[in-house]
Image 1: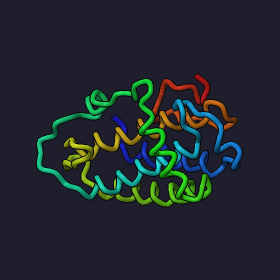
Image 2 (image 1 turned 120 degrees about the horizontal axis):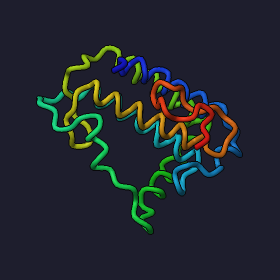
Image 3 (image 1 turned 90 degrees about the vertical axis):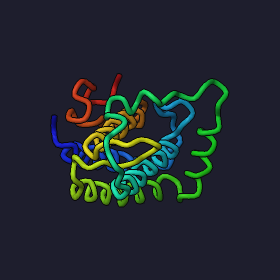
Image 4 (image 1 turned 30 degrees about the vertical axis):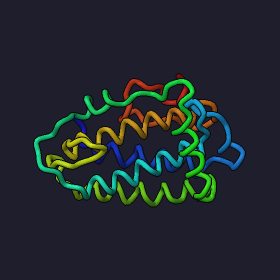
Amino acid sequence: MPDPVSLLRPTYGDVSAVLSSLTVAEGWEPTGCAGWTPVDLGFHLLSDARRALVTLHTPADGPADTTAVDYWTAWRPPEPGDDEELWSTRIAASVHGGLTGIAGRYAETSAAAVVAAGRSDPEAFVHTQGRVLTVADFLSTLVVEAAVHHLDLVLRLDRPGPAAGPLPDAPPDGNR
C-alpha cells in the first residue's frame, strides 16, 4: 500500500488547482453531487481539510473500531426530500467569499493538513466522526473522498480529473 501522505499531497493539490482555476460562472454549474455546485462542493472539501487538521491533533486510545474501508459503510446518501445538508452547505459556503474565497482557504488549509499528516505516526490512533482509526486509515479516507469529489467537480467542466494514484481505475480525464 502506498504511503497515504504521498497520495494525499497530490490529491489535495489537484483539487486545489481545479478550484482555483474555475471562473465565477463555472462555480455555479452542476457537479456530480446532486444539488451542489462547485462552490458548495468546494466548501465541503474545505470542511474536510479542516476536519483533517482537527483529527490529526485528536489522539485516541486504541484499538481502532473501523478501517479505511469499513469507515464508508456508515455513510448513507441523503434521502429524497432531505435537503437539510444541501441547504446548510449552501448557506455556509455563501459566507466564505464565493468560489475565490473558498479556493484560497482550501489551498491554505489543505496544505496545512498535508504537513500535519506528514508529521503524524501512521500507526497512531485518532478520533473523527465518532470513530477511532489509525492515522494511515484516516488519511486513506481523505484521499478517497477528495479524489471522488474531484471527479464530481470536473464532471461537466473542461478540467483534468484526479491523478491515477488515488483512484487507479478512474479515467484520467474525469469522464465517467
